[in-house]
Length: 85
Image (cartoon, rainbow, N blue to C red; front, side, top):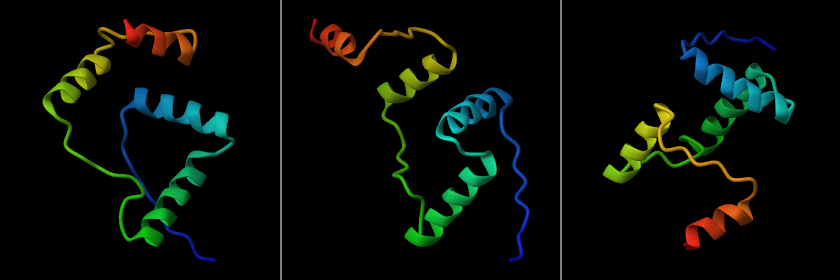
């Protein structure tokens, strides 16, 4: 089987976080990219929806990138109870 090389530049913090998730899943970055490309080939497009976020979502994402207004919860149950308030 012949192979081709894919080169990509990515923000170091994003790379580190993503590779941490991949390790938990037992995947290497190469395997993840191979899966991603395979799904694009099979579906004829991206394997997930890509949408332009509305103003609130865009603002929330930007705050998250700056690590502002982040809430952490010990469980989903606690998070949902907090939302009910």
